[in-house]
Amino acid sequence: MSDPSEKVDLKNLSPQELKQFITSFGKETYRCIQMLRWLYREGVHSIDEMTNLSKKFRQELKEVSMISSLRPLCVEEARDGTKKFLFQLEDGNHIESVLISDKSRLTLCISTQVGCTLGCQFCLTGKKGWKRNLMVSEILNQILAVRETLENGSSITNVVLMGMGEPLANYNNTLKAIELMVHPEALKFSSRRITLSTAGLLPELERLSKEKISFSLAISLNASDEDTRSHLMPVNRRYPLERLLEVCRHFPLRPRTRITFEYVLVGGINDTGQDAKRLLKLLRGIPSKINLIPLNEAPGIPFKRPSDEKVREFQAILMKGGFTAIVRASKGAEISAACGQLQGKSSE
Image 1 (cartoon, rainbow, N blue to C red):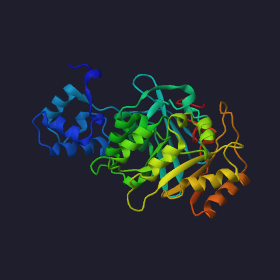
Image 2 (image 1 turned 45 degrees about the vertical axis):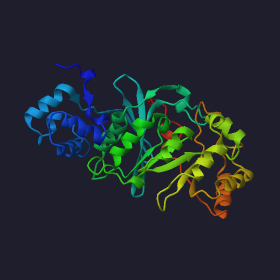
Image 3 (image 1 turned 90 degrees about the vertical axis):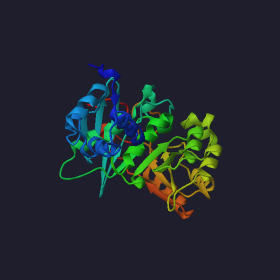
Image 4 (image 1 turned 180 degrees about the vertical axis):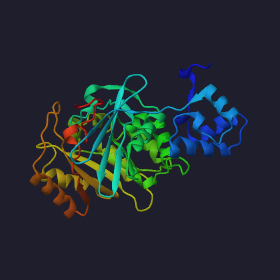
């Protein structure tokens, strides 16, 4: 009997890798489509459930491979309907996912790392440090596990990689996971309904610009000058704002798509009219829209949320300048599920 720890997790394989894996058994390539459907459409937990594969082939598969899954350790629900899922991984580490209901959309925010290395001053995730990257299976299993909890025929409509971690710091696994999210025989999400949010790791962003990406891109900006961004986001010292925006300016976008710039409004730090006017100049010429996120206050974050009036004034300047600027209502704050509050632990 093979050691389970040495078995191949089928959910860590890209469609091409799965095809190669299957043909190594001397099987037909169409079996790849069958297995993708079982893994992601049906969400099976065992190889024995793949009933259109022969019993002999299933036995061969079980000798060398397995199917991982996640089950929520804890689910908390806020009054606004936001749900936070806490998962324990095989090695004992924890991650969180957040399900946000908004009119006709059901958006799942998923994690790509255990912790984060970037140490943004307005975010609790980095306060606990970084443990490791998530495997492809661990990224995808968040979607599959949450999907199993849904009732009344509802389904996840959007996926945002904005949970714990910096997606581009886990580049290969993140992109492989997204490939399976949009694959027509796997999770089958529209590419326009997948969003990857990055703090702006320039080497990875430049690498991404050379690939045919199947998702929307969001940049966590949060300041309109170098000093303020370096204060809020230490990554700016390595990859300055000016260079980041230059890459964004030349980033190849699909027709009718724009880069989303996320801007966390921090009281007295980056929320003045002057900041808004500088932001207009910075983003001029980049197909973009701006998501304004009033800071979610929390113990351990040394800042305050700006007043609603300040937020409206900031938004008005951007809109008068010709930009789409949306104030994102904070959801799930009471269960520490709002933007910047994920720590991989229950708030109970």
